[in-house]
Image (cartoon, rainbow, N blue to C red; front, top):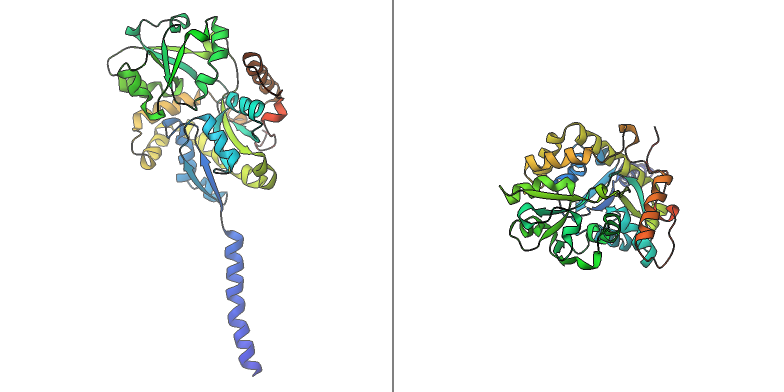
Length: 327
């Protein structure tokens, strides 16, 4: 009897150990939401996915498309996604007016790519020419949200500019077909607009050219995830920044990887967008991702001066330090 009992135990023990090992090594599942559909500027997330950087960090990452920064903030706050990509100004407004418990954990666009594009034959050449015109953009885009601040900086009357809502993937066609006088779009995606409008000439009004200097898009997480899963956040950030550095070093290679996952994004467009992203990140490379309190305060002050906020916001309300390794 003892022999039979021992035999049964020996058979069960390895199975139990295998089960325990499998449980211990199971990757943490993460849903990540983009700020605005799938575009060439998102290539580095797919680089991190394709090259196994997320896998190396013991993460099982699912990249889903968002419908604007506001949408990304809402999805992260609701727990639909654990992490996301969103515009800092949109996050500040969400914190101030709706007390949304979401914070930035890493910065990607150190410089702002916000812009308004028009066709040259529209007669729009300067910010003043936008008065009396219609500008189209997605409902949750950060560009219309920051337009009040831009109008103030450019010394134009924001009330004289009408905004219309279109789907994010319809913006290039909206401009090309003249369904609006202008469109809101990131400078990063200028190559896609040019490809859509063909031989027509493009006019670009960049928010930064009016003297606006502020943090733009970064990686966000909810306060609950930051508190309960800080290691997951830190591993995701590290793997993503690793993919970002690779994509900056080889934008065409990154675009080819993106095209493998998102066939609708042509390699030439993806390459151009990644080259544009390279011009927006912090420099030198070992500072990529870091958030500086002073610059964040300047961004908060800019938004606070441009909008009537229900509640005051401090830099500490907007970002959580410690998730990017310092050089």
